[in-house]
Image (cartoon, rainbow, N blue to C red; front, side, top):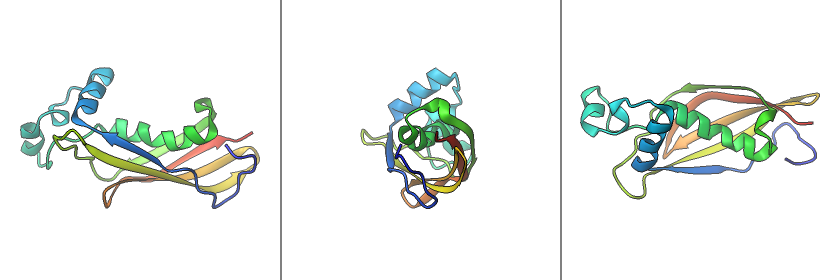
Length: 136
């Protein structure tokens, strides 16, 4: 984290690649075995375009833009997101990339508030995402 934190400051971008293998591993770690996370047939049966990454995985990966910057995950005081679009994961070795960015929107004492964006291609996949962190 920089020595001085100012409103408007942009954090270093984080790019995360999601593959089907990664989604399956997350299913095991989270014990969320909903078939939309590994079966195109089941995902399409409920109107999805294909297998989708877990929303909680997408949310958790998004916080990395903040924790990489502050260097201390214990410094996160609050984190909130809305899920706006699912991350569709193609059945390829390359998978799909989600790009996370964050900007400091307020500083009050030793607490900074950050707005976070997450995009998969042209789609915003998280909305109203923000975090508050201790900066001292």
